[in-house]
Image (cartoon, rainbow, N blue to C red; front, side, top):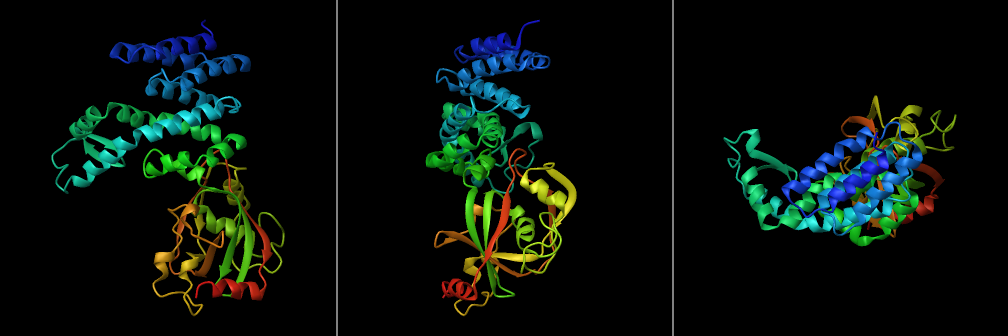
Length: 374
C-alpha cells in the first residue's frame, strides 16, 4: 500500500503542472487516494504528508484550485487532531491572497445580479443557473464574467476550500489567530466577501477577543461592566448576558452575581455550548428576555428614543456592528417587545465565547454614561 506521504507527494507533483484539462484530471486522480491513505497512518506519517501539502499551498507556482485542494486536506487533518501550528499561517496567507484576487469577480457578479429584473430568471431551469455572489445567476452570465477575468474567477471558486481550512486552523491556534487579526488588510479583504464565502472569516477576524463592554439596563437605570472574550456572533449576546448578569442559581454559580438583574438564567448545557465546552448545537431553543439596543437608542432626555429599532442589536449581525463610545461597546437593555427564540449553537466548533461580570457601575457612573447621549 502506498503511504500517505507518498500520496501527498503525488498530489504535489500533479499540482505544479501547467493549468489544463489534463492537469486537473491528474490532480483529481491524485486527490481521492489521499483520503484512503489517512486511516491507519501514524501521526508522524500524517504530519509528513501535511508538510508536503503545505508546500503546495505556499507555492506561487501552484494554481489556486490545486492550493485549495491541499489546504482543505490539511484542514480536515487538523479537525481530526493534527496540530494547526505548522500550517495555519500558510493557509491563512493563501486565503487572504485569494480573497483579494476574487474581489473583482464578486463585484461584477453582484452588479450583474442587481441588473436582472424580476423576470430575468423566468423560464430557466436549475441546470441553467449557478449560485454565485449569494444568488442564482444565469450560467451564461457567470461564464461571460469568468472569461473576462479568469484569474479572479479561479480565485473566487476556490474560496470555499480555502476559507474552511483557514477557519479550522485559526480557531485552534491562538497565536496564528492573533497574527491574522493584526493584519488589517486581511479583514478588509474578507469584508468584501462578508455576505458570501468570506462571511465566517470576516466574523472571526473582527470578533472582540478580549474587551470590556458597558451594559446599561434602562428599566432599572443600572449599569454594569462585563468582560467579553471571543464574541463573534450577536445571537450569543442575550444568553451570555443572562449568564453574567442575572442573579439566582445558574450555570456558573449557585446564587449568580450579587446584586444582579432579575430574569431567567440560561441552562448549563447552553452556556457550555456557547463557551465551546459542549456540543456545537443543541436541541433546546434560546429565548430572549430583553430588547438590546446600541447606545444611540438613548435620547437627549435620557429616555429611549421613539422608534428605537434603528438602534437595535440584531441577532443576525456581529459585535463589530455595535458602535463604540469612548473606546467601549455599549449595550442598552430595554423591555422585550416581541417574544423571540432561536437555535442554540455557536459559530465555530473549536472556539467558544464568554461574557463575565466585572463590576456594577456606581450611580454616578451610570448618569455619566446617560449624559453622553445628550
